[in-house]
Length: 114
Image (cartoon, rainbow, N blue to C red):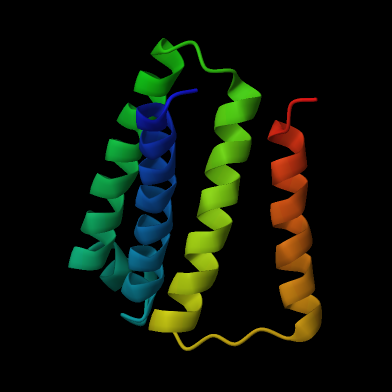
């Protein structure tokens, strides 16, 4: 897998993570109908659509589904933890941080070639 493919895969995961953060931001509106009309919600939909296009493009490059899935999960997990911490003031316990670290190690092991 070349560097451009890795960058596209990482960018795709960032699009999902930012889209999810936009959804969380739209949920602050108070109710479901208001959230659906929020600019944050519309931004999330646009980001999700762009992410779908990127993943389809990656599949045209003959990347295995498992590699795309684990790569997306790896980058997504890191970005979501950072977004939660930096923008939503979320804090994590030691046990939660250990779980995050083990999840990242697990994703790495799934993509490791012997």
